[in-house]
Image (cartoon, rainbow, N blue to C red; front, side, top):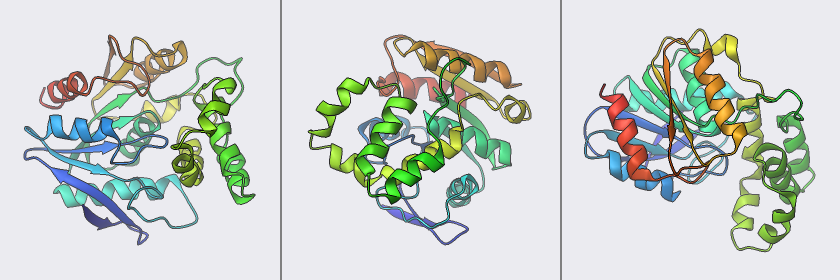
Length: 260
């Protein structure tokens, strides 16, 4: 494990592996750098790239500083880019994909982005996603479990009947421990619609990925993001879903796009 200091003094922990052009992996909700998807992806890419697999602020071995702002997370990516030598390729999954696109829009030195299922909502009849304020209020009231449940049901489309079973599992305590960071995901993604005006201003090439087994909402969002971007391509990966990927196949897609 190595650490870098972000602009506001927050310490960001990361693992570095491999040699070659720098690739930064950006996780989504609940993801830490020890998540098997990210450790396996880092390993698969490390034969051709220098991979930076990091804990986003508030998770794992990284620090956190109030008040939160999406710009602070962009500065975390900038600190990693500086550590990588001044430019990087970026992969983001779920809300991490949204963060990667926001960083590119903000002017971070990102040469290409791969965005796997940024979790926007294109169905105007659907209720808005949970807000940063809603989640923060539950956490401050000591209702971390309720914050997790709100995020999972309203934000991740997990059936409410599954939550009772999940609350009894050993991993639930770990989810509650980082419940405050779910407000960060809400701030990044917003109430739901694709920020088409911002994305239309992006000049970096983007590969938008979706899983063929993912809910229609995720596939629709991927198509909408691709349509909003001026320099992008869309690919649907067979057998994959939101949070369920074949890391070897995914790594091959990243490597092909990053070296194209």
